[in-house]
Length: 167
Image (cartoon, rainbow, N blue to C red; front, side):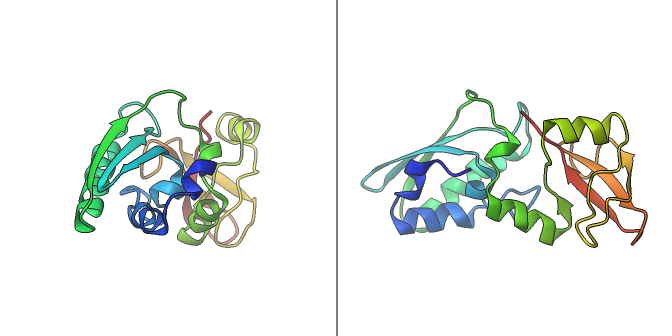
């Protein structure tokens, strides 16, 4: 979810933010991921408030540096402040971001109830991002990162990550 006030930013600022990707899921921009909470512009000074996807997420330092470097390349001076409240939720991933995840081979979060049913009770409801079959099984609670679980499709036999729901 992109905050409404972020969409009113100048196009150049939006383009710079769109160019900064999550290093763990490089098809998601920081806007698609929903971690940009606020942007203040004062001439060439940019103050960004960034919410981590979870406490201790190792990607946040990289994202903060990438933001500073991307703005510096366009002759802006950016500062980045981590904001812990409200806590990030997977609900903040944009629809564009969810589609990008599927195209990249990661099933986006399905919601809290579905997440628990699949991860705890083993229900076959997580769709394969390649063939859309829900005849899938969890291989591991943790995938390529802690925020993902590893699944395999029983129909096309492909392994894939499922982006866990965080509320």
